[in-house]
Amino acid sequence: MGRDLEVTVETARFPAALRPGLIALAVDMAAHGTQRSDPTRAVMAMMGDRWTALILQVLMIGTWRHADLRRALSQLSAEQAISQRVLTLKLRALERDGFVERHVTADVPPRVSYALTPLGHDLAGQVRALIDWVNARGPAIAAARAAFDTRDED
Picture 1 (tube, rainbow, N blue to C red):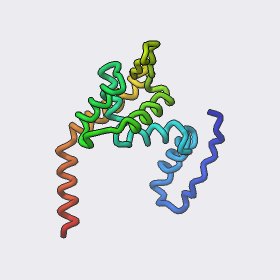
Picture 2 (cartoon, rainbow, N blue to C red; picture 1 turned 90 degrees about the vertical axis):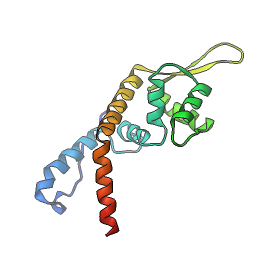
Picture 3 (cartoon, rainbow, N blue to C red; picture 1 turned 30 degrees about the vertical axis):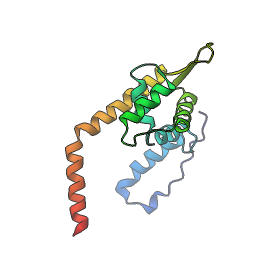
Picture 4 (tube, rainbow, N blue to C red; picture 1 turned 120 degrees about the vertical axis):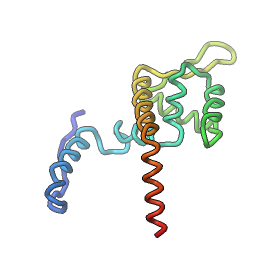
């Protein structure tokens, strides 16, 4: 990417045992980007929003027309309904980053459909792995929450 890997972490302010790890993290971040628009930050922010991970999981099933995708997302989500505008914005962001392809037919009216690209399938697989990891640890997470909530009540 041609980035200047200048790392400006004042390690003297931190415990000595933590400094090597902090420096390594800072070097990695400098190499891959710290700006909001850099792929690492932008994609991670997208994955943390309300809809993107679910959109990717639904698109793993196959190619979807906009209205059908919206209906499926609304039925699967606890939020119940995604607006047409929000879905369009999410799909455009995924398309911009190369995760989704938008297909438009020459029909009148045009038919628009969305599918994952190979890069999108790869990302969706990684998201699925994280979802599976969380699901497998659900009881431990629930126990930790209960312990924390009990502690806060004291």
